[in-house]
Length: 511
Ligand code: XMP
Image (tube, rainbow, N blue to C red; front, side, top):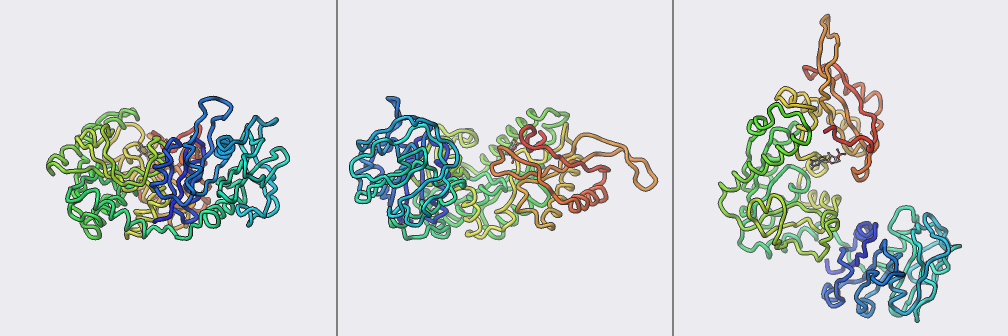
């Protein structure tokens, strides 16, 4: 993992995506604050530097800038959108407001003699989103692309290996965008090594060993992808000095507590404390029907149970968390690749428990990389590709107050739904799917008898980011099978409904 690309973040909406695309080309990359001093960047030994876009404009005094030294490190630099404008301005060129704001697809014509565009067609549609543009090139630069309304859509200084592009190669709308990124990485930066998850696992294990030393680590194991991967990684790094606490609040899906126990006793034999706290949670939730109150009670009770169990283990040195890269970038805490950080003011659980030292071995990985790492470490596929599941679990899929019978209905109907979605081969294309006990009862007939039983709803969505979602078009025959099995196999249910609402206006969960 010696070769790396450093991305200076000026606050552009696509910064994460740039990091993602570089890693997709199998070159390790990470994002740092645009103010990072050039000497610090030099110490990171990058093969190349990318300047991100930004919502800012260079027409104002306090526009974000990078250290001037960035351009004289002898390291190739690619400025994207604002990054290009900044490079032009800082190196003696000029930027001004375009006559017309350019937003959307534009046909870019390339100078294919430039090393950046050698693999490009003569012209190609690229995504543009800018108000300002370069009007005077800095000394040493050539104009290497244009659009009908942007005379300088890219610029390059081959001697110093400094390049700027006004369009966004990282978004999928720019059909040949990945070719530009690849040319920058391979031809201009000379990146040859392949960044692979197996190599990353070894590095992360070594870093954990160095950081933790002879110390001990506490991990709250939830059964989710991130905490499971952290557990597997830490087990490989420090073995029995990892202590995991798994709190079963009684609202897990069918088979999940058993899977967690099996994996982390048989395959990764960590020191595991399993707490069967179902009764304790149910007691606290008696007669509570308001969704937010349910969530708050479950959150607080989780911390209380965890604190009790952690106390029994005695004082441990570090607290491990499955923080992943998008969380790190979003919190603005972009920095180097350390897996361990000392926080003076850590929030949530670690603070409650008095920990100031956090081990976060996934903080440089995107979600799909976490899954790859899980597979490399040998975790079962069903754990690694587990669909998202809310912390409060089935409790918020059971509308209104909770009883064991109601939870039983959601759990069993959900298990049938999951089985049939998998059997129909839909589990990779439907991003989240579950059943909800609606709280509505309706009249039915079973045999010769009238029933007055529960209605269960199927919620299944397709989504990229879970911020917006569409309802999944599950084939009617699969729905028919799911419905028939639920009313036949789950007692207390005589009706199955399908939720056909997008998010927004509905949320994915019902509570
Ligand atoms: P909503 O219902 O807000 O859900 O559209 C978006 C995504 O977030 C998940 N979700 C949660 N995840 N704790 C979690 O860890 C929670 O309390 C929680 N609530 C919702 C939800 O399952 C969906 O994937």
